[in-house]
Length: 438
Image (cartoon, rainbow, N blue to C red; front, side, top):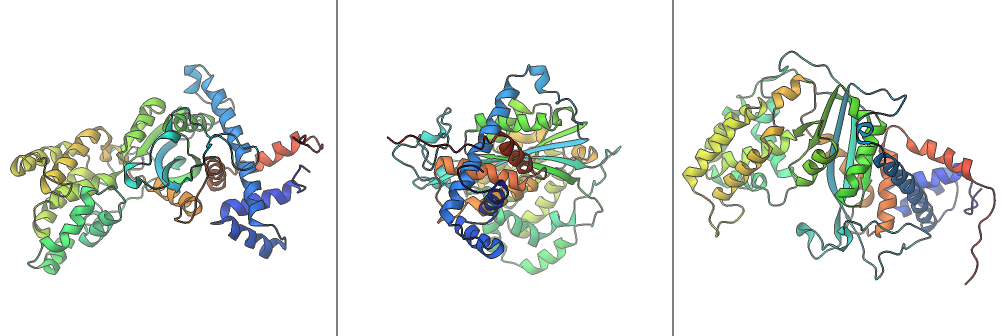
């Protein structure tokens, strides 16, 4: 028994409730309904955060030990660990609200560790998308082992029907949450540009797709990491986890991400031996936007079907050449052009494809049995958002870091909390700790 006067078993259940439920108040109600225990929301909050800080301390200790290894050993694996056949790493950012205090270095509850501001991130203003608000970015990492087989050639050279279905593509591009992206604008323009016979054109073009029989790699096991710390600290966290799981010795390796510079900086610094793969859905949205720029839907769709076929087959150079010609026809963007101007839309798509063309060899990735979409990572971000994101939810830096770590442990398949509770119980002295009064 520690100073909470709760057994390790009860503590584990309370922490689990605080991590799984969408709020500490809901956790308190769940404990009352399922365990017949009256435990206040604030008590569950304090316990969950305290355990979260202990897990953060363990995590940071593992990262410190990993960084002390010689470089050759960092790219190896621990003794006794079997390297997986397919290892995939992905990263993305989520959103949560951080409330500032007059002295942010001091934890709000208990003896929590101070937030890591070594890279200066905590002192930075809010990001451009949410300037003037409390919104900040959290970093989410996903490490997956997958099952697939390597083929002699591309097992699916034909474009899936879903990628040449007008209704699905328009909906898909609208759902991508980007900062006034070219794809989103093109999806909005689609409704007003085609005023001739939209229904007839859509029905005719729908038949361009052909069904294909191809199954992407299946996820076998996943481990997650999450933090509010800077990307410079997040990279070593992911690298330490990958080393612990034997990812650096896997037969086939992949790093998934969208077009964010942070993702590919992380890849270069810690996973350069992994095959870089740009999420094909993000690439598709730029291709769709550029095809529709200054064209009716019927005209643009024919261009899009051609370009997305090249994209699917990994022939991105052909799209770049076509976009360069289209840019010449429309002209170079002018200073007065907004983000939604056709010239700017084409220029944005052209720059995006040129910057990431080395990460878009999708036919080769399918041949190797590697995934080509970051939907796994985006799904993980949503699962974190369910707990920490909300217009009514505000966190301190220390509280956010603790909850993100606990949520990562909860969502991981390896159930790391089982070992934690045993280690914690083994180190308890049985003595009650008292603090001298001031």
